[in-house]
Structure formats: C-alpha cells, structure tokens
Length: 247
Image (cartoon, rainbow, N blue to C red; front, side):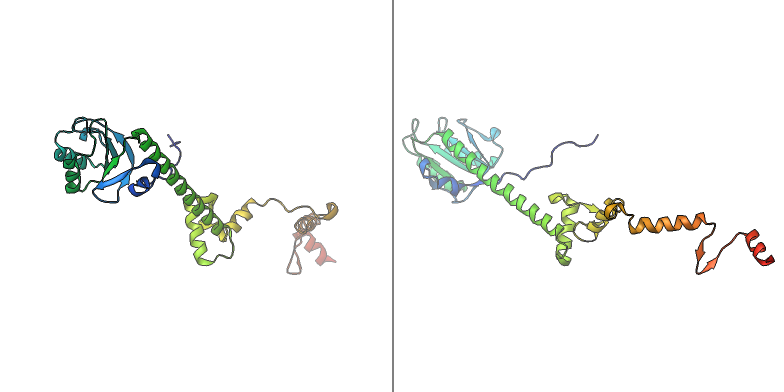
C-alpha cells in the first residue's frame, strides 16, 4: 500500500536559554551552572525524583516541595538529560537553597531563579512563542532554498554549476522541478519535455497548409500518379517498362 503520509516538515529548532533569559518581563536570573543550554520543551514537577518523567532537553520547573536531598535531586535531573532547572521562590522557600546552588554548579546544570511574580505557565508560554518564531524562520529558510533551486533549474544559461543544482533540485522534487530522460529542466531536459509535449504544427495563415502538411500532400500525390521519384529515376511497373521498350 503506498505511503500517503505528508512529507516530513523541518524540525523545530530548540530555544537557547540565553534567549529565554533575555525576556525581561519574566524576570529570570541564572544563578549557577553554564550560561548556554538548548531548551526543547518545558516541564513542571514536584516529585522527589523526577527522572522517570523526563525525556531530556527540558527546562524543569519546581518549587522544591519535596526537595530533601539537593545533590541527589540534581544528579538525577542531569542523568535524565534535562537542559536546565528553574526554581520558583515562595511559597515553599523564600530564596533558592544554597545547597541546590552548589549542587547545580557541581553537576554543571544551569539553575534559574524564578521570582514570585512569574508563573510557571508564563515561562512555558514564552518558550513556545520563541519556538514558534524559530520554526517560522526555519520554514522560511527552506522555502527560500527551494525557490533558489527552482530558479537555477529554469535558467537556461546557468552553466555547469546551475545544471548540477537544477538536477539535484529536480531529483529531490524541490521547487516543482521535474526530470525527463535524466536531464534537468532548464537545460537538455527542458527541450525534451517541450518536444514531447508539442502537438501538431499550428495551421498556416488564413487556413493555408503548413510546410509539413504541404510536403505530405505532395508525397501522397506522387503515390497516386503510380510511382516514386528517387534520385531522378522513374520506378515503373514491369509491364510499363516493357510497353515503353516496344515503342
């Protein structure tokens, strides 16, 4: 059964931690760990061990409801592949526990302080919006690349480099290019496609026959007269030749 699923779309690029921290309305502040991290999504958990519920690449948000062993907690988060940890102060803690700061620094996990006025859902919404912008940029880049390949395929004087680009575009089905007989559209293949798609010659002016039609008509007239003329010699039937000799 043929595969009718749509072609895969470009994956959504991750959002950098620096881009999220640059959103001043959130009031986020990195207080430990590396400056850079790639965020693929956001997850909130108050489990003492969130490892079984993480996929990797998350910005994990917590208020530390069950934070009893900061070092073990951070080690498990790192083991699960989380990208960063966001800790919300209040209502459980007035400040980020120093032991948690030390553990994140030791395990190399970025730690972000979330001020009381910032909600976890607000952070998640900001990340989704940044991802939407990144995806839009990626789709636009792909569309521009397809347009460039289609332009190279349609330009007849693009040279060997353009021919190679057009051929690659055609074989991948990029930009609507097509291949006929192995040649890229816009070069030899374009002429082949045009020739195969061409119908009969258009009629001459005011209904007069075309050159091709006139030539065929002359050939039919020669056949009706009983002979074909080749290299200036008459090819007659045997009885006609005998009658001519008897004269």
